[in-house]
Length: 462
Image (tube, rainbow, N blue to C red; front, side):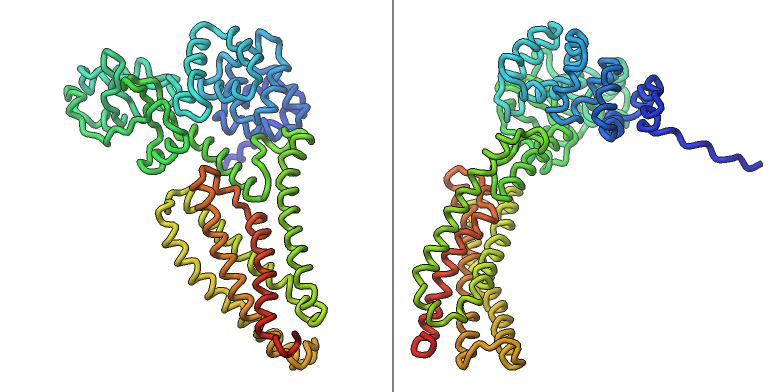
């Protein structure tokens, strides 16, 4: 007999709209925290706040890390003070540390002082590190094994103490003095003979992270060794905890967001869009816009310098946007490629001369290619009587052709070298944004264009 298909389970939104709050809470409890958070964030702000006030502290603590920091503050302050403390206390140490980093120092210390003794000790230990150091975001939730154990004893230890740990795919062999000795994949432990000593089980090379290592360097280690977790040790090689892949993915996401925002010609927001107040947004964007505006004023200065040439050959003004935009576009292409290559460590500062030679060839070739298109377009429009460029249209076309070679070549070289220069002086290459490169190339593009026109059109239009 064919059975009728089971009715689809109601979504969280449907449960909340129907006022079925207990069912909504059970819905969240049955899901993975990331899926539960995704469903929770689809609710309206009003319903988010209503539901959050009803959640058990442990469930609320699992949802908070997936919520924007500004909204975390709002949701937490909906709860009574003692409930808020229980939620913060129940958060994973690394997630709690990121949350606390967003608080003013006075609020931070007051909240930490009211945590349980165990969580307060963990938090204060993590707080001894700088915000971008690995030791600040370690989690102590890992499985440690004694070196004298055999595989059977180690598996028994995993079964007894593995519940609730950050990850079980890797276990760590730690000496009686707390020093990290080795790490093992759980799969290697399962496949080993129960009587085989841990020291005889072969596995991947140990890749520890120093507690003072920069998180960007830690991210590079994860990418290089393709690990889901890395152990963190201090200067005495004592095991402090682990960093998991999801932790460094947060770092990568934040850093990528900063670079994209800087590349757009502004300071990084350091917060979600709606979390940044209007005054802060004006400060972040206004400074760069002012700098770019002052740069573009040099373009007007260059134009005024060639005012005589423009007056005698008005046709030259028709191609100014074409020339300077081509140079800006080529510069933006080059700076985008080089910023990303530097970030991925595909190239280093030592490679600047190779990049310089390569980009000169590329720039001149691309400029010549665009110049051909421009030359053909001017001649074709003249022959088809679509535009009258005058009796010297071939010289005008040649001016555009030669100018594009120079401007695109300069734009490509400038766009590729600027990230190297900034990195050399310790600045973030992402600040060599497309608008900044375009502004630099605009001024030089006008100089190249009108200088070329003086030479080519001398004795005819000029």
